[in-house]
Image (cartoon, rainbow, N blue to C red; front, top):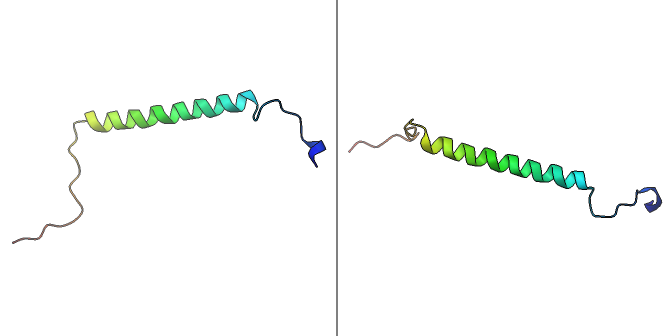
Length: 55
């Protein structure tokens, strides 16, 4: 079974590590952008879904 596997010097090919790094950077940029947009937009926070009890 192991004779069918190609011999690889490292654990993964170099391009797979590059793709993983690029994907992590893109996800991080999207998260930071979302946080900044939510912080600096002028819309007020939505009201809570629960109803308040009258006293």
